Length: 54
Image (cartoon, rainbow, N blue to C red):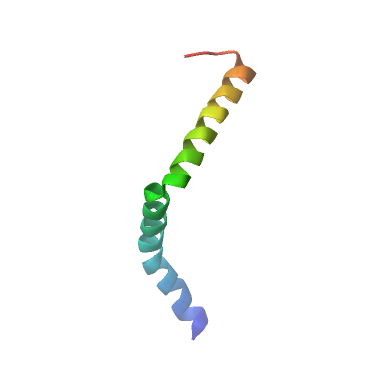
């Protein structure tokens, strides 16, 4: 019975779970501070590797 119901339950619950997770991440100020710092660092690394600016 679990092999039949679990895939259907996960398929139905996945959009809500993803939306909730994204909402929690976006509303967290700590995650925002870490995200901006990581994004800036990653962009600088890519520019250094490719020697391309804007």
